[in-house]
Image (cartoon, rainbow, N blue to C red; front, side, top):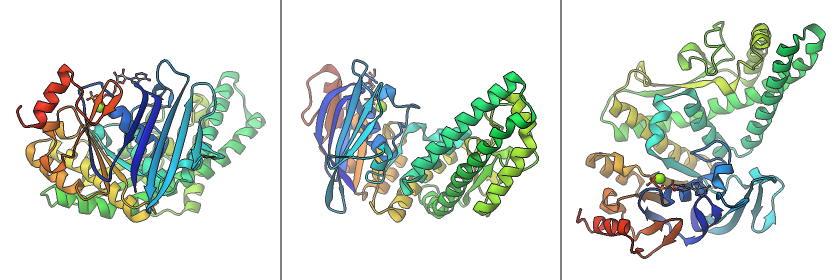
Length: 410
Ligand SMILES: Nc1ncnc2c1ncn2[C@@H]1O[C@H](COP(=O)(O)OP(=O)(O)OP(=O)(O)O)[C@@H](O)[C@H]1O
Ligand SMILES: [Mg+2]
């Protein structure tokens, strides 16, 4: 699939922007802070209904506006689909498909699939479990859009259960008054196990692609692998009093467990830790605390791999995501977004990455300096200046550098 038209109204620093895009390479150049990432964030929002930069959607509405509009024409299977998403500061967000109002915002999912590469991708392998959960959940939602509903059901149950635990702690509620907690436990287990099962399924489909992608970018014999670790298993109580438990190392693998087994183990562990949850006033286990363990050979990537290996692993995860979406969804090639990645890479890696993305149906590349982008990826650029997009260079001091850079005069 590809996007042939994008229009933004009061989105971030865009008042109104109306752009026609092409299949193949679309290069967006502009100095820092002009709106390049904002534009690709809008495309990302259409594919996962989340920003890759912030929690919540309010920061995406222009500071002087009460609402924002993202409108796009996606070409899926040679047919146009007009997608519209309205974000409101103080009303429900809405979505339309071919001008028809959709019952739920999330019904817009499944038309625009995308994979983004950004310098922060290293966080997926190096930082907190939440980075890894976001990575897998964003793919789950794109492969099976109905999971957006499961995630939101789970979040709702988790919030309610947490507030019940919190008030139980404050009022020192005991015994029969806690019967309502049992009801919440059942919903938590039901939706939670569904999420854990989906992550397992996703990771088992993704892993062969990761192995292949890693081989194509790293000249190494180490075999990458991914384990799904869950807080619903095991006797360990380590980390229960932290906001975020110790992570993958302190949890057990759920690989190979069926949904029924996940549910049973989840229930057992909840009963076991109830006193701790009441003491803490917080839900201490569930998919919101789980983690993925990435390994190269027998060693974890986090804490052991070199910088170069970590980088290759992160890149392999993204390339594998592209392959997975191509293989598992009806929309074919996902839109590939390379936000500011070339500036970070040495010449050899630039060329290798360029080779890998060149054949994708549509690619968006952002760069502050066009000369950083390998020449085989240089299409006629779009210039981004202060929330305006133009195909002709806009004569400003910063753009003079860009144009000069484009001609290799730097
Ligand atoms: N809600 C908003 N309303 C108005 N302006 C906003 C809003 N959110 C972000 N901005 C502005 O958008 C600009 C950032 O744009 P963006 O992140 O797209 O820059 P960029 O072109 O990707 O720059 P870089 O090359 O540094 O990555 C900032 O100047 C910021 O103040
Ligand atoms: Mg940017």
